[in-house]
Length: 446
Image (cartoon, rainbow, N blue to C red):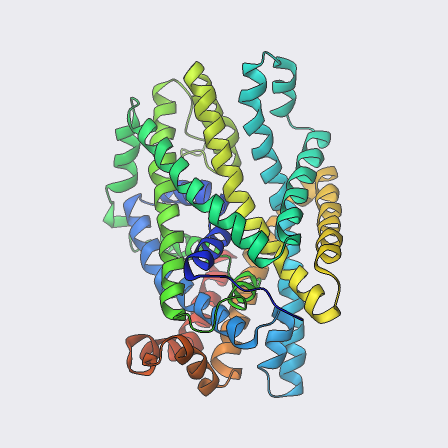
């Protein structure tokens, strides 16, 4: 069976960066920075992105390209022993289940983004009752827009690697950058923006040794790169054999970090512009409002106070958020789809719709029991399953995958890699330090 393949390095970087760049980057990173010493957090995040996220990303890319397979088949094929193959199967299935669970709660949030994106249009058309429905919590709205979002994701994935993932990532990622830069330029012209910029970029170095700051920065670097669930492993399996993997991995890491940094330049000044317009920006705890409340309360209040211009800015902002959501969701859905297509010979179109319907079913159950399930599913999949799975992938790369096979794979795109700094550091680093760092992060989470 002919496997898909990314047509160029740029196409892969757009797709892999799209997977890494999600809603967490755009609301998670700025508010984490605000609550953890501003620039001190930013600096620690930049360091840890290369010391933790990049080595773990490389492990997934190398396994993916070497095996040219889905996560389950890939881990089975690099394991020489039967017990190793069985553990590989469990880790692979765990990755697929986790990707499905993440997508099930992610599609609900992405559905909210779509609803809030439409609200300025209905307001402009004088349809106030529709605008109110779009921005008010209800099971019908949540399930309806989650369905629209999952169908959108399914349509892209069912078209395959070149016509689906590559085509849409190559369109959406540049659009995301352009929209973000335009919004930053606009927000910088508003009163209060400079106070937000100062909060974001002037460091408080007394906080740099704070364990909470270090753990938060490590977690953000780790989760923002889509690690552990096999998205980067599967994307790695579609990279051309002659690509220089350490270089493309570094470019994906840099792109992801750039979007997170730009998100901070947009969101932090916007929060302080909102304060200038009389919108409360601090929670009862004294910390800046973060997470969904920031996106669905503080920023909409800011847009409303901007008058007619606010309608356009609100529309542009939620288009940006929707693009970030789609580029991540297509990579999550590809993980179980690639397994169904390759391991069970199910047609791509049929597999995509079938798995999409299963994810929609889980999303619907979450919507019907929102208070009970939403936070639980989000925490168990991102804070427990992802770090443990990523640790297992590092262990497979460092302890089970033959070192010589890794070197030969890297030499395909970089014949002199053995003499370079990457090969002198990375194999030992991924074997010992990555699992240890992930265990420390995981332990701190409890």
